[in-house]
Length: 419
Image 1 (cartoon, rainbow, N blue to C red):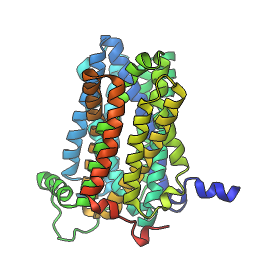
Image 2: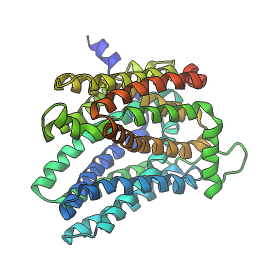
Image 3: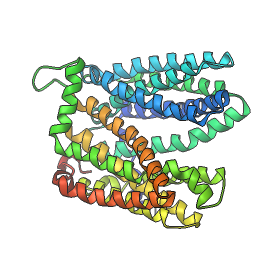
């Protein structure tokens, strides 16, 4: 029994064998938890100050602007610098931005421009330091352990995404957004100290001997995506899943019109995919040993779309709805593990930071487009039709992607990367 559990449970070998990955992972966990406090604090404070859902929604816009800017700014230098140095300076900048939020909140009524500006800068810095962390991972653990390291990062992401907002809500209810911003401020020190304790992670020598910076470096990253059909396919398949199969914008409407419940059910609908994703990440042992990783991505996206369509078909049965959303979250984690692994294993170190930045842009931008698609179809027909048709479109899109990109369908883990 114990042996079977060990085979199913997530493989923690990267944490055991690599001191620097252990530092990076633990520091990132602390920082990500604090970021959830700040995110909830911003939503609450903007709504309290304005009473306007539209103003709260604009936080998504300012965050998306920051993400886009971060990809282009970071892309201009990230692969020419020591990844550890990038992490150190971005955490210092995060500390400054978080300190401004604390100071503004202590004043009682911070200007909306300050809140949106801080949100934009936070996402901008995140679009620089997160690619630096991803690009450093293969250097810290070795190619063979990249899938296991990626699964551990998914555990980090899902755990902080579930626990962080819940704790932040309790703290803000008992005190104020100022306390949430203070937690965020302290949390950045965790990753900063971890980065300071790590060994340097300088970029590997460029094959051509030339290491572009500025706009040519950004252009080189996008040119690589255009020419490398395998990497291109991983971006396309994720956009298909997120644009057509991401119904979260409809959860408040479905809670009332389909399930005839209130805000508590909205929270359950949002939590269910995250819970499924966390369970799958914790039981990722067999997944990380899969050799046919391209096929795994395709089947995971097909599973995502199919379960989202099933979610739309359950009628008023809330239990079945939550189950299908949890299964969808599990499928999404499998796709994320292998899409990230393919990028980190196949992209040269000299380009890995820039490509990781584009990856993050796709991951953050896709759901925003999905919210738009879901809302437009729901307005034109109905929310239920939007969910079902979106899930089915995701399935059809995945099969179309498999036909258009045989490179993804045929991709297998390199022999040196098979545990």
